[in-house]
Image 1 (cartoon, one colour):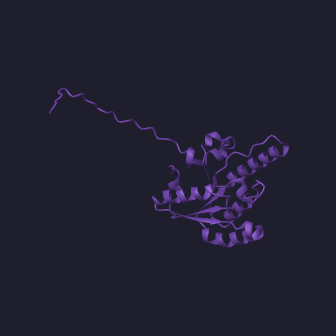
Image 2: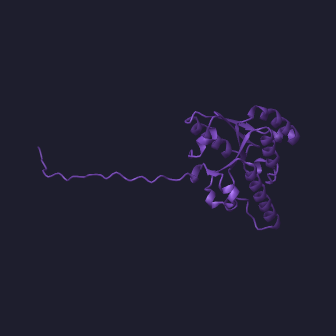
Length: 201
């Protein structure tokens, strides 16, 4: 699942931090993604450390105090901020990811954005359209703050990633059904019919 852009994340650096928000209900696909990414990075002699901001238990003020202390150790290291709208908000408005990324930059970290849900939530109601608009604005601003943007979906399929300043730094590291299949030629079987048939009794 590792794309050619990933080894450059760790150039001259051997440790990468994956920063996530709250855990999703049931199976957490983001944590699974990071576990697989950790294995892939290991092949390039890079380590991935998974961290969660404890905003659901400590509140946002407590979570930012934790981030301030933790990020002192992340100067000059890549911190890959994992993004889904619900990870940074109970209502799907992930506004808090913006001050999180801004703080990481102030602390001297190299900030990446891993976009797991690049498209906004759908819906025909007015509130759905407002929420979708906010989600798109937030993730676009987060991408502007990031040094590199990693998408689990082909960036060519995401409209807001076509902005020049974002497209130049967008990379694909797919997961699940988004992993491209590698066509392989089927080996040609050489079947030879026997020329002599022998019966024995």
